Image (cartoon, rainbow, N blue to C red; front, top):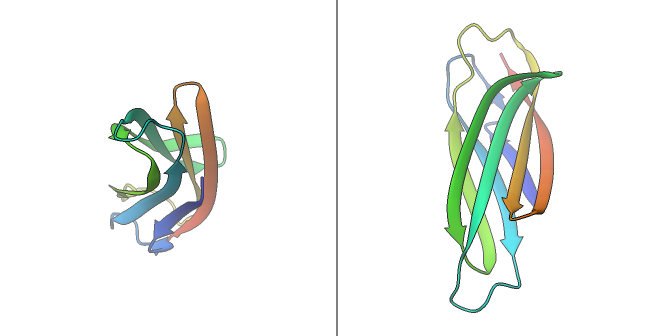
Length: 102
């Protein structure tokens, strides 16, 4: 996985942020696509706050995927972890970044 980001990196409780994953797929037959599972998770320590999953079809090349997330209004201010996982069959790539909820 090349990039995992939260945009903006600071978000107010109840406001929306974009969870961005950038990754590359190589080795697929020209013109063909594979099923990709994109999983995003907002975490506070060991606790999962929100999970977003999407199954998409992708071919060779660089891909950017954005999904909106809205930390619940009752989320306490602090630094949270955004974890991303991209899976193609048994192959998997992971990444994470921190985000501040205020």
